[in-house]
Amino acid sequence: MAPQRRAAPKAPEGRAEAERRRPSSSRKDRAPQKGSRVWLQAAGLAAVVAVAALLLWSSLGADNGISGVLARRGEVVAHRFIEVPCSEDYDVHQRFEGCTPRRCGRGVSDTVISREDAQRIRSIAEKGLSLGGSDGGASILDLHSGALSVGKHFVNLYRYFGDKVQTVFSEEDFQLYREVRRKVQLTVAQAFDLSMSSLHLTKPTFFSRINSTDAQTAHDEYWHTHVDKVTYGSFDYTSLLYLSDYLEDFGGGRFVFVDEAANMTVEPRAGRVSFFTSGSENLHRVEKVRWGTRYAITIAFTCNPDHAIADPTFT
Image (cartoon, rainbow, N blue to C red):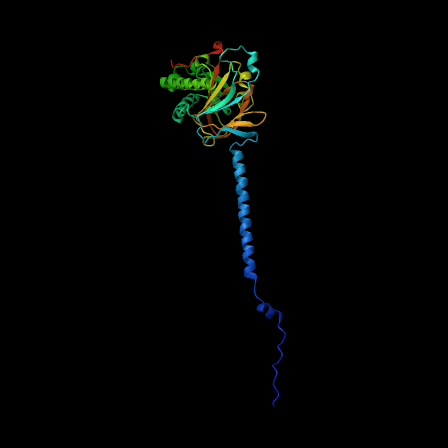
């Protein structure tokens, strides 16, 4: 029987050969690594967007003291009213039964003045303020007294410009102004259960135009917290008609009720009427305007007929 030939023993594999034979897992490893990189990139982008949004919100006028919103710019409020306890401010002034506040509060309505009429009223302010304007951020136009901001001072619109005033305004302007005042007065009377005849227009009632220009005098520093009844003793009820839109025409510039528990803000909207009793129960301020231009008109009412003022007339 012929002897069987054995196969020659295999030589040990070299390291390179072994590596070639070893199943490759690099492709599988690369997939999770690539996915991780994509996830990290997405997370980083999201963080950048979040920071940018925060910075944008800050630049648009966010206020850390704001805890609640009475009325947002984007909503249409038929009537919203919050009752608050009256302060003692009215006790140091002569009381008028049936008018001096016994029921205090703050309210908002977007259905008193149309946005179209708000635009028409704003054009009156624009025409008057085109004759002057403050060097600082806050300009005033008072059609009753004639007060107009010019540079760092005030002038009497009617005396300073004389007959030129009649080429700037029209009788229709003043008629619209009186009509809007009457609608706002009726809204305030109804909100506080008052006879409209017991409320009297009082001074100062004025247009304001605010932008982001640095203050030049104390008159430009509109943002300080204050009480209307303390600042203007004749005020019993304060109202504001906004003539421009928050975050559309300007940033910042929200109206802030400063309360012990939580501050509350009104975001301006053209045609929006905000109203409140004028005592310390409605301590308030206006945020600094960060960009753009904010227009409004303050319309004040008193219970004291001795402090009443007449509507302006076109003469």
